[in-house]
Amino acid sequence: MSQPATTSPLQLGRQGFGAMRLRDTKSGDPDRDPFRVVNTALDEGVAMIDTAELYGNEELVGRTIAARRDEVVLASKFGVVRTDGRPDGPPDGFEVRADAGQVRRSCEASLRRLRTDRIDLYYLHHRSETVPIEETVGAMADLVRQGKVGAIGLSNVTAEDLRRAHAVHPVAALQEHWSLAERTVERDLVPAAAELGVALVAHSPTSHGVLHGAAGDAAPADERQVVHREIAAAHGVSAGQLAIAWVHSRGPLHGLEVVPLPGTTRASHVRANVAAREIVLGAEELRRLTAAWSPTA
Image (cartoon, rainbow, N blue to C red; front, top):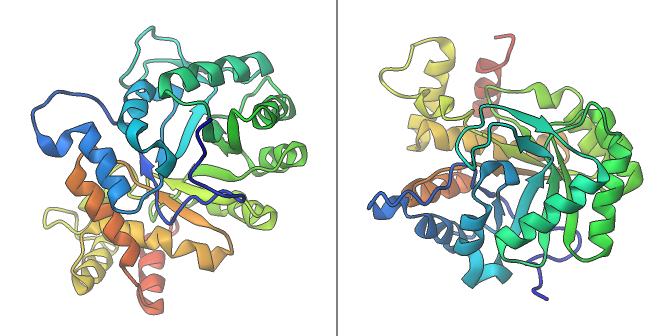
């Protein structure tokens, strides 16, 4: 049996790689070669590679990590099922299936596609309105006991969901959208995660690319953009790198482990994203940046 690249508790690393858009496009551009993209992430010290059954690329992810499986904290998700009949691309429709039988079936299928015998971090992708989360997490806990899953995660849930789930089995990580432009998670989920010792994996730290353009010459010159431009220029970094650095700063402030999860389809962008780990923002810079992008600003 292959061994995960972690010890208990789960070591997610300072930053992960979100593989949602990873595709074997045969574009001919070496920078977009998915094998180069993933290996660049691993070479740069990223351990966690994150995918999901919904993304339609688990087989590709499995191939890209096959030669380096023991270096990878492999994360995948289940529970959101396409209803459009298409294997990949943006779904035209989906539904949530989180009953115990679906948990088992999804895990077995993901293990086959990923070419592995263990998923290091397995998430419920979205809360169910019909299946009690205790049933879902109970089935996930069975997978942990069987050695098929290393740790349990949740995504797109409420603070109450987290507490109920954690009472059944320890939850290692939450994956939620957290960025300068999206702070909803701070209201209830972040305090609950901090209380329970749950890591927060922050997907879309640049808000699906919105914050990449915040410092561009063509961006609207409102107060948010002005502050973003000034601070990015002071550090000689891009707007996207500054946005990722801001997410890195949240952990000490809120008292929990925060792991930004940027995604890209270019190896060069992987290197730029990882470099954001080293940006050190001063207290006044953080205050100005956070206030400028506040939802009430």
